[in-house]
Image 1 (cartoon, rainbow, N blue to C red):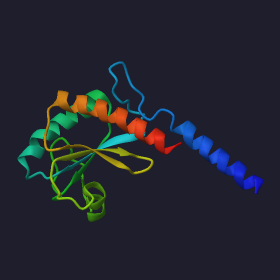
Image 2 (image 1 turned 90 degrees about the vertical axis):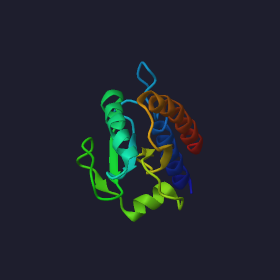
Image 3 (image 1 turned 45 degrees about the vertical axis):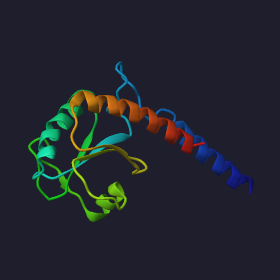
Image 4 (image 1 turned 60 degrees about the vertical axis):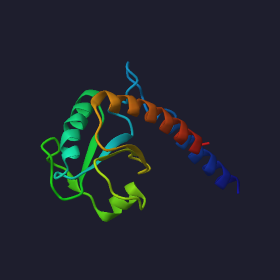
Length: 149
């Protein structure tokens, strides 16, 4: 019994210490590249909003240090994301949770837990995206720290 309690304590202690700083801010409060988070973009190359939003995401990725996983809903790619993969039904179900599939759709994904947090449905500008991610990053950090307690 004592061994089990000790192992449980060690596992919880390690998990909490790894979870201490999810988002490591840089001078402007943005997430850095070594974070366990990435952006996930669902798009269709036939969608004009997706075509306009893709350069914003690419610029954001290049300038703010976010990793982006681009998932095509129609097997096509965009110039900014030529290596996009096809979104499987399982991926769509995980992201949209039975709600109507709209795009472009942008999520923050925890790479460790595979949890998705919605950021935007539809296109937005660079500054709006930057501000929204700053707010969402803080909320995700607070939420996930609460789960570790």
